[in-house]
Length: 503
Image 1: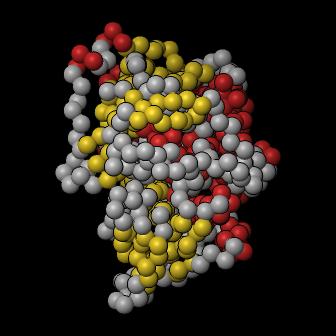
Image 2: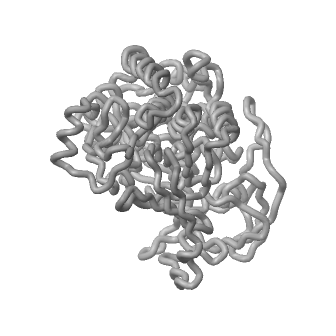
Image 3: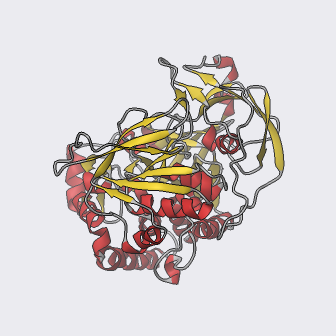
């Protein structure tokens, strides 16, 4: 029930490889109750750590809602914060005295008098490059453009930079140039430090790019201010959202995206569950299973609908050493519990992926993680008029682009998971290519060397990095949507974009 006393302390106080640098202890309110959190945590993380599972209820049937993605891509953690309804508490930092209230269904929208007005708007002109997204692709793009003297504005929805790198604890493969040997959160720190040291880069945190408008204007909504920005170029790197699955009980608190669990566990040092069932045996599902084991959770099993484990051997070997059971040719049938997961039922499937009656297995657990892939976040690109197409190998709708990552909207570039799902290394490479492309187009200082560097990166990306069989699927998908400059011009003629940049 909302307002109940905290059930337990879910924070991780000892970990074999991570040290959690928690900020100052602070107190805030949830439905009038005092809750303790730490500076640097999100409200959702602090509530979850204190044992709260239910943040709101659905509008019509009153079903419990709790944490799912933990990166602001869904509505599961909506609550009323200091009187503002529908606040995404997973990307809202906790602070002393903040008042959080349980949201029952559709909350009443505050009157217009309490909102932002024209006087609160800042007009920003003269910016060379607007980067939408502060993850690996966006940060790499900003650094590449700023190195050559271009002015850069980064817009990021979270109150932290780094994107999905923040919660990655495994070490990167590859050379030192590609951060080989560093853990993801260490890479995020390096990229952020580099960005923060650049005088020609401005960062807007907790800000959302909400639309492209005539004459090359972009609308941005911040916490307490609106922005109207007119950049020469735009690099869109908004990332991706976790996929869900349809089954009874899939909306119960305790059914969570694998990435959401990583955010709680690796970024904030909070154990997402004690007994866990993971759905999906790809790299993410297997890696998060290993990370759960490191943090002290018990992984009750991994469910995989295919007849084989999808993860790379190096990752699969780790969970095999722990004796984690992998249920291949199985899928999840339902999840059960009252206001919180108490268990799940899985079922075997036949060669046509149809459930086999009588093969059900009940597995008691308090957390079910969905690790069945990501979907590129291309909503803003589509609104800008970029031509998008459905590519299963890349996770869904993605924009057509040239090899230099320019979309059908002139001057609008794409990079990272929004261009098609791969992984952090390719996101950073694509981000740098996009950033260098703005340098070349702008004719900035060092444009010739930028063009040479861009060609070298393209050759490495396509001929070496994507030559590996483990990324063959993603490479095939990227080839489907990469067109020549001449073909892009034909696409623009037949699909005239409503906006454009690059003048």
